[in-house]
Length: 187
Ligand SMILES: CC(C)(COP(=O)(O)OP(=O)(O)OC[C@H]1O[C@@H](n2cnc3c(N)ncnc32)[C@H](O)[C@@H]1OP(=O)(O)O)[C@@H](O)C(=O)NCCC(=O)NCCS
Image (cartoon, rainbow, N blue to C red; front, top):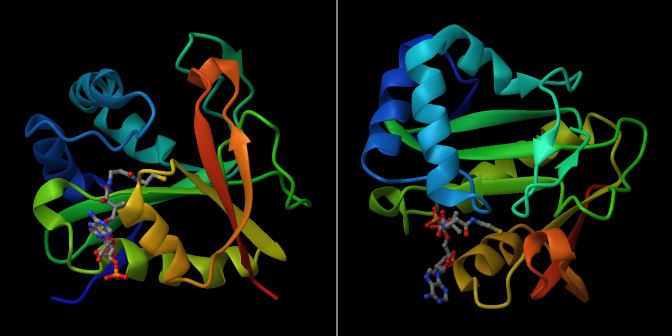
């Protein structure tokens, strides 16, 4: 089955939960801790969890950064990668009316594919599919950030026309460290 980007829904939730139960985390920053929280929310309030993945009005409350500090949530939404089974997430967040992001936000778009679904072009295709949707929101460009040693993620960005615009130090809330900022022009 070809790859689709789908809105998270209850029918597909068991496949997402299964990926979490296999030890995968969709959260590239908070890792296993975030996976545990998601498993708990899927058990306690599956409908609420699914709805939280589509949040264009930022009703979901503050975001907790890795050092425990809290920042205001931006509007955003997630899509699941689906090839007949769950194969990852791609998420987008933005400041409506602007392409600029607050300094603590590491890019407009993030994605993660479980190890057993990698290397099939899924993340590259998912980003390609998301970009027209983002352009329709009026953004002239999007930014994505990745660590210098994350070669697969850099390949995904470059495969979608990304160009490196900056090397920068991640904020203290992320433990510092060097990161790369790429821009993909949409107009
Ligand atoms: C980054 C990630 C989403 C890629 O998912 P994927 O579906 O396997 O990606 P694709 O198959 O679309 O493309 C992977 C690219 O990385 C390349 N790649 C894979 N391993 C590589 C390596 N060790 N060195 C260099 N390139 C590598 C592949 O060749 C491919 O590039 P190509 O299309 O130019 O051949 C996945 O590895 C992942 O979930 N990683 C952990 C989470 C993460 O890092 N997310 C991004 C945060 S910025």
